[in-house]
Amino acid sequence: MSHDPAGSHDHPHPRQPDIEDGPLTHHMALTEAVAALLQKKGVITGEELRRTLEDIDSRSPADGARVVARAWVDPAYRERLLEDVNTAAAELGIDTGNIPIRAVESTDTVHQLVVCTLCSCYPRMLIGLPPDWYKARAYRSRAVREPRAVLREFGLTLPDHVEVRVHDSTADMRYLVLPRRPGGTQGWSEERLAAIVTRDCMVGTAVPVATGG
Amino acid sequence: MPRRHHDMGGLPAGPVATDEHAHAPWEKKVDAILRLLSGKGIMTVDELRRGIEEIGPDAYDRLSYYERWITSISNNLLEKRVIGVSELGEAMQEAQIRHAQAVGSQSQ
Amino acid sequence: MPDQPRFDPGSTVRVKSLTPPGHVRTPWFTRGKNGVVVQLLGTFGNPEDLAYGGNGEPRRPLYRVSFRQSALWPDYDGAETDTLVADIYEHWLEPEG
Image (cartoon, rainbow over all chains, first blue to last red; front, side, top):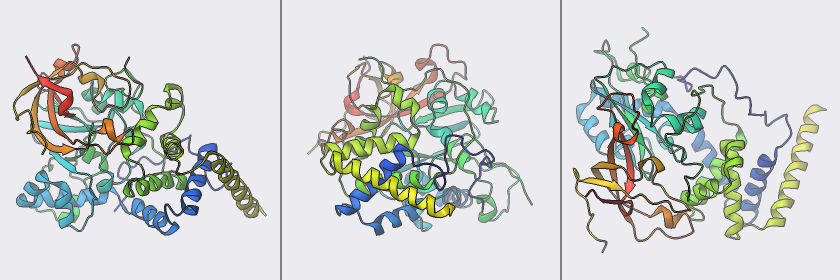
């Protein structure tokens, strides 16, 4: 399963120096220094830091995709997911921590889109760290005021009879889009369904498409 | 008080740039530090955000995402006296020396 | 014992039009706007206190509030049915009068 569902890693971010070879920037040195001091003072341990880094690396959109695929094939699970994502994810063995995640369901008549205009809140405990564009000014500014134009930039043009419902994650909730199951997927296994649920489908900037053999 | 800089919903902006970079190890380390500090009740995510909002419009736009985070984290830790200013400076210098040695030994 | 939440789902509310300095989780673009309470999400620590070293008490009711896009932006050019939902703490809401 690809961990790069957007398929857009062809161009490395130009602002991202290679930490192994380049000079240590001020902020990299600050990071190393804070980590070292916190360990020296016993505030955190090296083991805790290592385990937390492993946990960060272990989270990816694949977990969210499993949850979505289960909701597509199991109506009772879908109900539980819409009630409480954290509990529903735990049923599949995914520990999403204690920040509440809510699912919002896209249908034939409503398309759900998630943004955080004030910072970059994101259901990272279920689908991993957010992409750069989610944290950048253009998306945060424009997704609330001209969502249809933003969606068109992602290649998604929605008809006027579909309500676009934007969720600004302003507080203690994180939002996961439960996308609409596309036609032409009758009889598909959960694994096959999960493979078409990309990260962007769970943010609302894309919709799943029935592709592949 | 006018609208604050980070509160940008609805402002005009250019097209969404969808190119992405993979997170560097130091960026994940910043994320991990915040998670640990938050989990231990030493600083809250709200304090992280406040610190980011207070770095000023110029720095907010100039710094990358995790540069803003570590700026806020270190300022919060200084304010809470979890760490001190000069020991932080010394630890930064030590980090630079360790890095130079690592790069030097790599190129030999 | 905290007070009962003040608003029921379906209530029309107005976001307070306040402009304090400091850490706030009520987006600028919602202030002074009318919306409808969709759901009470529970009570949560007050971010305006948590951001300054406080413990967030007393906890505040938090609501999902739905706004018509055309009410937020006079020049909105999407569908009339388009909406925006934001999570707003009770102390930033007043009954729409």
